[in-house]
Length: 181
Image (cartoon, rainbow, N blue to C red; front, side, top):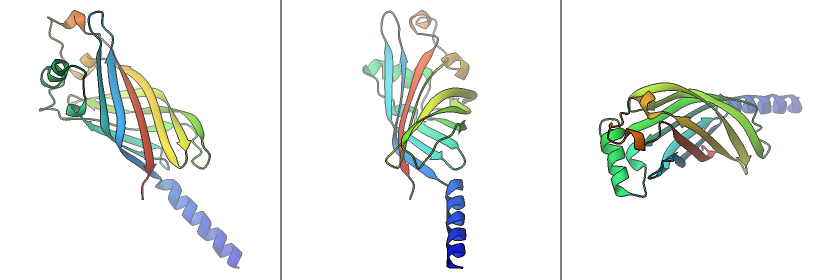
């Protein structure tokens, strides 16, 4: 009888955990890069908040656009004032889900497909990209690289510099999430 009660209790705990296995970080990393003949444009943001619900396979990110750091102060100023208008649109976020089998109890790198909605500059667009989720020492480490076009998010490029700025930007995402307690 004790074995049956113990077995039922373990199943209940396992099921409850599978529906709410949250992993979080406040120090995720997102960068973007645009290679141009005259000057490359690169910015890094190490203040990305991310949550992964491994039980439901949901994922969400949010970040302040002013937290992107550029090597040149003028690039940062133009980015915030002229392009993303970070005073008017201070945040960017992504909400979505992922498909693929990830064994939380077994360290390894797992290929997944992330789908969801990305909001930048007040415009929300669907995004779908391959990614990896690594289980390592109880943590979830996510990585992906994708491209986006600023014009898809109503980010206007002045005609004076339009030919000097790439039409596509490469975005890199790296997050290391710890189990929520």
